[in-house]
Image: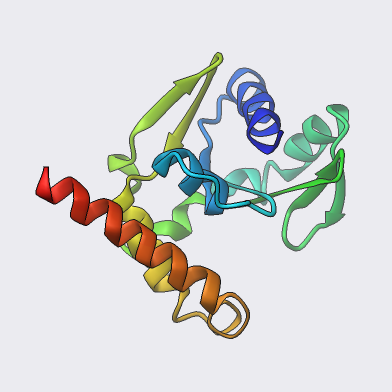
Length: 159
């Protein structure tokens, strides 16, 4: 259900705002690895201008689709009990060393979106494990994801 809601949102962003979002977080990692990680929410990275100077347009678009803003600071919406939060795509490179221009595009059910590769997910989760909140609250989950990503990368190297 979360992935279907993401695809609906991605199609909307593609068509109405000419945004190709990045599916991020656990749901993105699930899609990349093909394994269920029980993602709690939908994390989406988009160009920063849509979070500041064009926020009103994005807010109206999401609201029109039944998403209700519940945390403006985090740009987080809820619909059908599912949380979707937007963050800045441009922060990815300084945070984890992931080059935006090298992120592959995926097309699924009429939606174009970006999806990190396993190597980039490893960079993200390793950088996240140094963050105060992630280190204190999500450390076990992040450690398990890092281990899983490394297993996938090692298996790929052997083949």
